[in-house]
Amino acid sequence: MIRETEIDDELLRYRSEFPILEGTTYLISNSLGAMPRGVYGAMKAYADTWATRGVRAWEERWWMLAAEVGAEIGALMNATEGAVSAHPNVTTCQAVVASCFDFSAKRNKVVYTDLNFPSVMYFWEAQRAHGARVHMVPTENGVAVPTERLLDAIDETTLLVPVSHVIFRSSHIQDAKAIIEKAHRVGAYVVLDTFQSLGNVPVDVQALNVDFACGGVLKWLCGGPGVGYLYVRPDLGKNLEPKFTGWFAHQNPFRFEIGPIRYTDPPFRFMNGTTSIPALEAARPGLKIIAEVGIQRIREKSKKQTARLIELADQHGWMVNSPRDPEQRGGTVSIDMPNSQEVCRELLKREILVDWRPKAGVRMSPHFYNTDRELEVAIGAVEEILEDLVTAGR
Ligand SMILES: Cc1ncc(COP(=O)(O)O)c(C=O)c1O
Image (cartoon, rainbow, N blue to C red; front, side, top):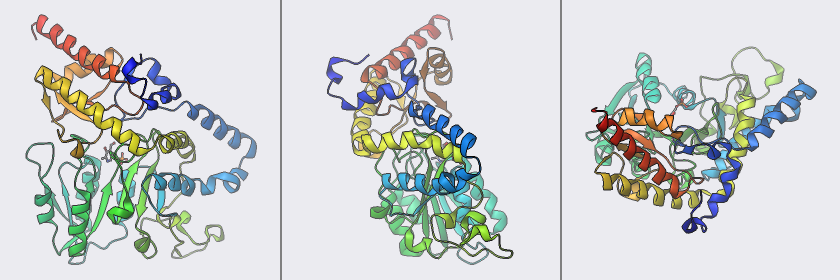
């Protein structure tokens, strides 16, 4: 239901593009963005192409698709043409970056905070076997790590700093600019994980002068699972040689040469094997809508709606595990009310889609398609669930 006060909210006209909004209160775009209606058509077109064009589809459409989708993602982060390659997920992007470097040399320190997404940390921990010295800066409050503490850990022996732009647990926006400047002062490179920012918080890879940026399309970009992206700064991209490579990165893949690879230019230079065509096709309708809506408008609305959620949580005295300063807060508000895990389970039963994470609580993530009323519905339901639990003596 759209309220009178929201009639001015132009972004609500996109609601009809997302079928799931008809039957649920969808506040979980930090985990999986709602599917745009256009994906039905994209998947049908994909099947028709496969069915009718068969192997000719590679030449006619599929071979270039990863580069085209990369360019669409790149446009959202002000990347130059050809700087973004497509991959199945962020962990693979980390592996491609790692494979460009030598960890047996003196400069082999990898610095990040323990608020990174765990998959990224599992990957880097495993690189100790190749000589990487992992230095993890711990958080004290579970929300953020003070920038100075992270900067102090970045020294002349640091090779890479793979950090999240927006922390998945708390939605804290890290000071990417300061991190990148410090890394560059000591000769290190930053791999910025923009999974929880791009599509919700503005990202400008050129203004940041970041070396690498990666993420996926399935959350704030409404692009579905199976597509990750990797931006490589163009001057680095020309020369780096990923050892995790394959025939898509070859100058002339169809010569099927024997022996070492001859690298082509980016973006294919950073790819390896056959790309995930159905996932790339499914990603496009969401990317198109996000580009049309515009990240600045999404951000303005998100700041207002997350502030409203914090206000409602405060009225009930619930613990808020996300930054209160809107400039430091991404699109999620983590609320740790009593029995928060059980509350989350009950919310799901009522078709209010949110999630729960240890040390965070219930994560609520409005996106451009949510109404203010939905925030109140969700908080009202929490109130009722807590009352029921009290009545039941739990
Ligand atoms: C910040 C961040 N990085 C990475 C991931 C996921 O990594 P992958 O694409 O390798 O599954 C997530 C969440 O799914 C995330 O929130």
